[in-house]
Length: 449
Image (spheres, rainbow, N blue to C red):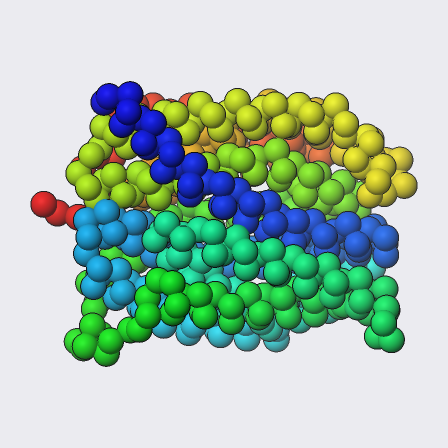
């Protein structure tokens, strides 16, 4: 491939990755803002919300069954200039996720205490956790629709719009948290429930704005003729991509829920330290997420255009950049760990544990960027089953099994569990590098020529 062609690919990638980077940063801040503001309320509220968010994110993966398929199919169909099929895919995705979203909302709202009881949440955390989960869970369907709308816009090279919406959501959430957690501007001080109300309201506003943008900038209408008869082929394709893709993410989030259960056995301080560290560490792999998602959309276009070699070269470039930037950022966080944690809590044990975790995590960030890139890129190429099987086997045997062995059985606590995470991420990373260079994903696309 000529140099000019490589530069063209990098420019296309940059135009997608830059707004995705800002959007992802703001989404991470949306969760971090709740943690930071609640840390001024109490460490126990942070621990409770950390457990609830594990469950909420797990249920959100149900929506990803459809959304992951939406992104992959739309990018390949756009690359192949199949406009009608793009409209059909987005329409089917919205219908399915509305139904699924309402079902999940009902489940989370009515069974919040039961679910948290299964997680082993102690009585000192139960009231705060159940109150947060009841409110955020009741409006989970807002997120189901918003995720579908954002996926369709990004796949159409309109990633700037979801980014702008996320700016609005963050501003609303910060203002809502300040008002409702601490009781400002004449409102009562609601603590954890105030954070939940603010989060749910912000997501509702985001959904409305994204709908307006979709109709004005991407798909102006959904002709009934496109859905008569119902396009079951597109639904099957969505599920063909989405089930194993979401299964890989579901496996990861499920393993994290089990690990949270194990950490809960270690103690509230370990649970709080993990919650703080997870929110800090997210910023080290922010660049990796954005360039991997942008790269995956570009790879989908190239597969649709019938250019697998260009997709391979672009993938190598994304992988190398992801590892380099993530390692630099994680090292900076490790060096400044005690200072950052000192801003969030005054508990010396939480600061000690968190600072050690941030140091160990530097090694973990060698494998994580590869895994984030590979799962996105292989999925975009249509190779959707391989990441699922690798994740299922390695995550549960190494991350979960190792957490129990090192953290509980040998008594190494949170630090032992983080060592298990290091092994998990790097083993999967080595497997995925081999898969990408083997190029067996070339024949897995959905566009047949």
